[in-house]
Image 1: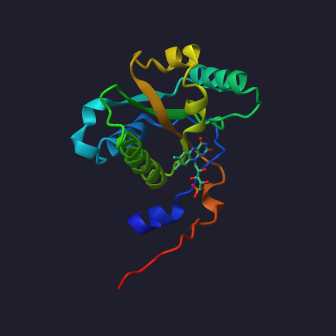
Image 2 (image 1 turned 60 degrees about the vertical axis):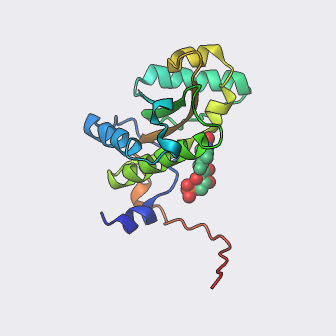
Amino acid sequence: MDFFETLQKRYSSRQYTAQPVESEKIEKLLEAAQRAPAGMHHYQDYGLTVISDRKTLDTLCSEYQKVTDSVRDPLYKAPLLIVISAGPGARRDTFQYDAGCMMENMHLTAVSLGLGSVFIRGMFRSLESDSQAQKMLQVPADWKALCGLAAGYDPAMSNHPAVFHSLPVHRIE
Ligand SMILES: Cc1cc2nc3c(=O)[nH]c(=O)nc-3n(C[C@H](O)[C@H](O)[C@H](O)COP(=O)(O)O)c2cc1C
């Protein structure tokens, strides 16, 4: 798939089949994250966690529902979640950009692999101080799970209209 076609096909998938993501595709997503730029070359401050265990994903979902008192599934039943964590040395002025670069690399790679995916931040924010969830994510005590890419097969992918979010563009010529 041509790069611009990949860009044009990207959107946030919020429905998934139960079909697991093949391990070769998971490896490609991980490679994509590890090909991202990072401010001041601070790669040592980030880690990736792959969660494909259905029980763990469901427990994260129910923990979220308990903490937020809602019935919403924050992961949309996706069979895969790749979590980005940051350590205590992560630079305050760049960590969100660094994670964003890794996330977008994975999000676009997912499109090129025929996978739907969505950037997940809300669930991590809600579970930040939930010890049960932190234990499940296996993040060391002084590290923080920042966000994750939920991914899988989206039954609506082939019919989804292309998205384009129009922004004001100022030209200084
Ligand atoms: C930093 C960031 C956090 C996001 N967090 C969530 C989230 O927690 N749950 C969710 O469903 N979508 C989340 N999104 C996806 C956005 O809602 C989505 O990209 C936006 O509405 C535009 O839609 P599109 O991606 O389909 O073009 C997030 C996106 C970004 C960039």
